[in-house]
Structure formats: structure tokens, C-alpha cells
Length: 183
Image (cartoon, rainbow, N blue to C red):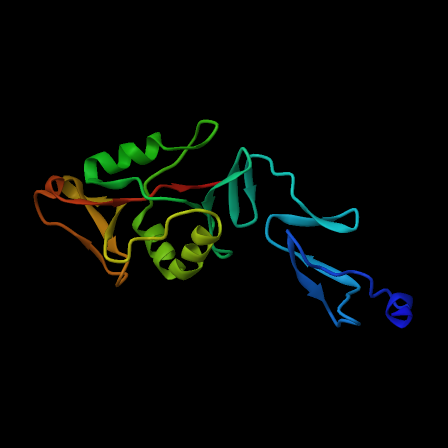
């Protein structure tokens, strides 16, 4: 025990906020601890981070609650839940009215953003699960804001990643809606 103490192995690195010990252990103790997401090393222990509204890494906060997430390679955030299944004409308005935090409004993702979301679906779903969000609905399609003539907008299947649009009468189809936020 004195050998471990002499060389700085004094930390147990367990409990709320701890991800574990860093480096080698001596007698079950460490010289450094790593903190879980949302915690930071402060005054010799892992303590809950003081969170302001806005982006902190891959998480976007409002009043200390995660309201959107992004994969590390993304330049936009995705809302923690779907807004439901709706007609394309309603989807854009619902996203523009969606308040991420303190009147910061979202938007309907473009077809390019939907492709990025699909490519990072696994990472996003993990972040949703870790932070109280709702995973993407695998068996559903999601509206995009990218449209061609006549209001015919693209939508994407979250099970296959295929991007499609309707020919004629696009206003009679309904798909899922999930807002995005550009920081």
C-alpha cells in the first residue's frame, strides 16, 4: 500500500461521473481518473459540468438538457425526437416552428443532410439513447426540404438510405419529420 501511495496511486475512480481509471492500476487505485460524458475533472474528482445553453461538442443543450446531437463529422445538430408523421407541406412549417432553445428555430433537413444522418445513423442513435432521445424509425421515411417542380420533395428511407420523390400529387403522402439545427 505504501508503495502505491508513494508513486501517486491514490484514486479509486468509481462512482457517479467516473468512466474509470486511466493507465495502470496499483492495488486497485490509479494516478488519474477519466470522467463520463457530462462530467469533468475538477478539484480532485469527477463533477457534473456546468452547462450553458448551446453547443458543447456533440451535444446541444437547453437549460441543462440535451435537445440535439451530432456525430463528430457533422456540421449540424439533429433533434432528439421525431415530430411525427405528416404531409410534406406541414413538415417544413413544423420544423421552422420547432424551438430548440430560447427561440432558436430548426429547419427541415436537406436531402444532403438526410444522407449524412443516414451515414451516421448508428452514432446518432447511440447518442440519442445515451441522452434520453428517440432513435430513428428504421422502417420509415423522412422528409427533406429539397424539392423539385410542383412541390415534389425528396424523402429518405432510414432502412436503406435510398432517396426518392413522388411524381405528381406529392401533397397526399406522409412521412416522418425530424428537425435539424445549424449552429
